[in-house]
Image 1: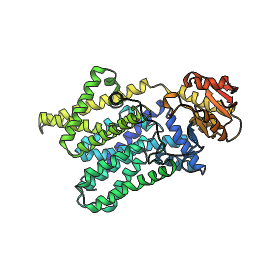
Image 2: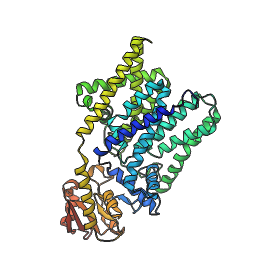
Image 3: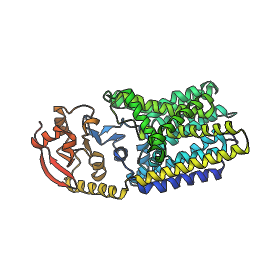
Image 4: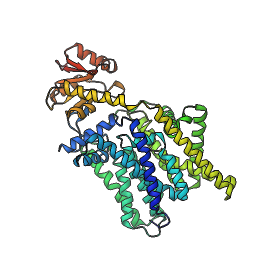
Length: 494
């Protein structure tokens, strides 16, 4: 890293303090856990129990409990397990890792933005990006996005320096590649960025450095792909059913998600403001692709991630392409928007005092909109105390209802049950999230795995359809209920 690109320590302190302040403001407004959060915690707990990288909450169609990890990459669950080994409660560890990663990402992003436009630009761009509602929410939630973005952004800083520093070393090249490989081992989205960054640097660095970078990137990915090949016969985990969404429908959903993840709610709430704003963002992306430099890199990174999301959700039956799927593109497209705005002002006013005033005004407006947007988001978010109380009540009810033992439980609340009781479970999802319809042999297989009890929410019969109704009326016995949960003794297989 050259002296001209090294970030002064006062700047780092300011950025870290700003990121920590964002987390401190957002944290109390969020429950901090989703189903995926609880799944990461389950994997960490299973690992600490000495059973390797495996899930003790498995989908209904999987053949064993525990089941090898593959649906998610391993870095985030392993980080949770590392904190847990130090004595930190796993749920708290999961959120702390996200918060710490958010601060580290802020520092890495600021370093990237400095390379795009200098100190004042980097400071404003970083503040605007950190105030994005989706990104701020991720920083206070037990999700893998914050560590993924930190690793990815730091990898991009390293790759840019490989191209522009006078004498980068082989160690720096390998480290930059390894960071990108670890990002891909945090979220599979990172895999598609490896060939992109390779193309961006291939013609501009010495072959020896390119070789070290490539090895650094491929080693973590190859190791995890080998694990998946051994466990599932596929490099990216268990097979998923073919998607039923149309490509135009996927693209519309992504555009709608960008509206809410990228724009301040004050703009997103009004279609008359939201869609022109997205059109301006599209124009900024076109400008960046033509302008070259770091804005082009940022635009390509954002677009490749959105393209990967579109491909995955169109080709396979997974969750809708919104929320967490798209927010990872925001920092890079936000950087593009800031750079395009500054460029437009300079072109309009030239290098004059008026340009400086206009730039400062635009920065002030951007920060006001972003700050107001985050405030609106927090003001409209359901306050967590009631949700946290309900979560604790459900956990307490699970501990009361379930008899002692370590055999798996059939349930639609598997991850929460695992946190509450430590027992493994077979997860029964609603129809839209099922790998396939239930088979007559499924219940026989569950019993062979040791399942003797089922625990469902009392509204599950409406959500899970005729299959659960047939079991309840055809042999399962309701033993007890509490806090909206019903415990069944499994009867004869249907």
